[in-house]
Figure 1: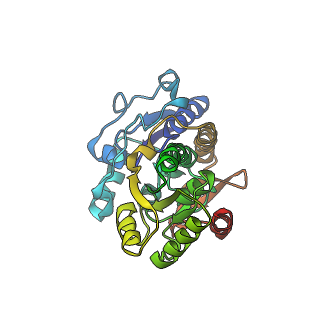
Figure 2: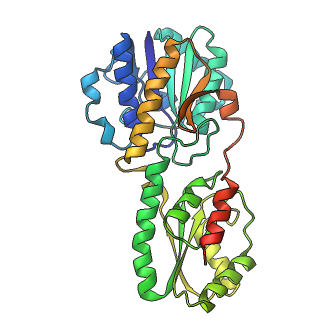
Figure 3: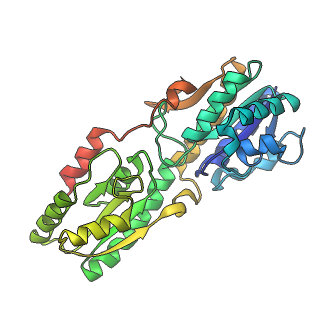
Amino acid sequence: MKIGVLCSGGDAPGMNPCLRAIVRAGDQYGDKIVGICRGYQGILNGEFWGGTDRAVDVREVSGWTSKGGASFNSSRCDEMRTEEGLRQVVENLRRYRFGALVAIGGNGTLTGAMEIAKRWEEGQVIGIPGTIDNDVLGSDYTIGFATAVKTGVDAVDKLRDTAGSHDMMFLVEVMGRDCGDLATAIAIAGGCELATIPETHTSIETLVEKLKRFKALGKKSTIMIVAEGDEYGGAYKTMEALKQAGAPYEMRAVVLGHVMRGGSPVPLDRILATRLGRFAVDALHQGESGKMVGEIAGKLSLTPLEEAVASHKTVARELIELLERVSV
């Protein structure tokens, strides 16, 4: 079987271990694994890893377990939002005689995979959730989430030293446009007092009341995590609103931004990526298509792409309550 593999959208730590697993699993089946460069745009432009009809050799992916980023490159593709673009992608898949496509990425990538599957009747399509936001349904965790949490916690640990030295408050903005899982996990693991996320209403007055209570209890410094998708629009706007409402701390805002996507994947991401990459190839050989591979309660699972992208995952209420209860 000739299988095209691509990464699309924002890169996530663990994409390379996933690519490695797909190449090596395909080799064991006798498949021809072809790397598609720059995501769906690569299908349109005919950009392939090492050549149009050349299989990726198992030796080429040696060492990719610890390698961050996406070695086949990733990008966003505006043409995938149009019917004409989708038809051209399918036409090119036929032209290059692919039998299957594996797409690694987040909600947008998986939506594209779903639309391709609807139009490419003779081909097979499998999606793999790779995004630091952990906002995809059908898997407890997505590839890249665990590493991004560690990156955020490492930053919080360093900022806490400065916050304590100067008796100040830091607002740390992290990624998470539609889901606050990343912000909540960093806040809990980093011992932060507050977090603002898309799933909950942000009341500046309530936040100021809490900060005044912290101050009265003798807490000289504090750190709040702000998800980029929170209703106030980020750490700087939230900071200004808090200042105007009388927050009792001197404040600074820090935006971690794209630094959260980089770095060598942590062991949990390497293991998840390897399991899902291998399972994706197994699923293709079992005749599966139009589905996303994932891990639920420790077990590998298959979810129809329509269900995986139907809505964004939201933070578990238990985690929100946990943060509230330990923030004293």
